[in-house]
Length: 68
Image 1 (cartoon, helix red, strand yellow):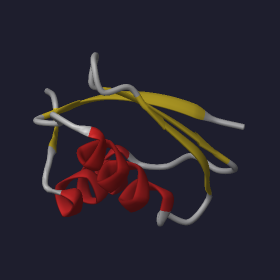
Image 2 (cartoon, rainbow, N blue to C red):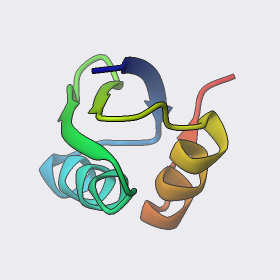
Image 3 (spheres, rainbow, N blue to C red):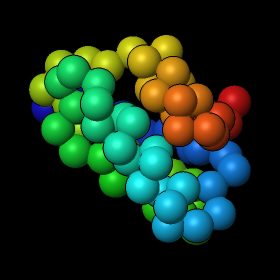
Image 4 (cartoon, rainbow, N blue to C red):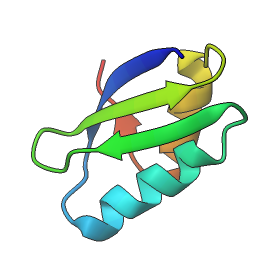
């Protein structure tokens, strides 16, 4: 099971965490999303490899950005 991590910028509250988690969870193949508000780290477990572009699009849909 592939696991990838990202840093998301702009999250400031529990609602932010929930929004990011919800949008990433919609990606086909994603089995678990763990978001840490204090560090901005997002861990994504999936049954198949997920592209960085898919994650970036989901995070953008939630209103945030992947740190570059």
